[in-house]
Length: 135
Image (cartoon, rainbow, N blue to C red):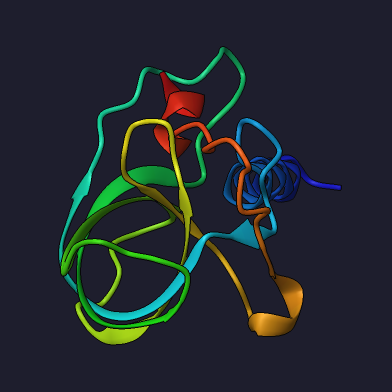
């Protein structure tokens, strides 16, 4: 296998790991499911990756205006959400799956559909903020 292809596969594997797993293993569950519009997003600063590694996805701070809460409890009409993503997202109305984090905000939970996710246990401890994996 040629070197550029190997590096691409390595970058994809690292990116997939960062996107699909939270620091404390709460992946695959959500505390709230909302319909909201992304109104702003800011890439968060990160420390340099360990030697020989690259980041394929980066932490962003998203501001979501909540239009409707489908499941769970959300106490604000505007939320700050931490997301790990490859690039900026379109500013549009969509469904968001969220898990509470210990910083007092929410982490975004990725999903290709409802069938892959489950609600988190009601008394479960909050997740670590996703950006903590980068600092």
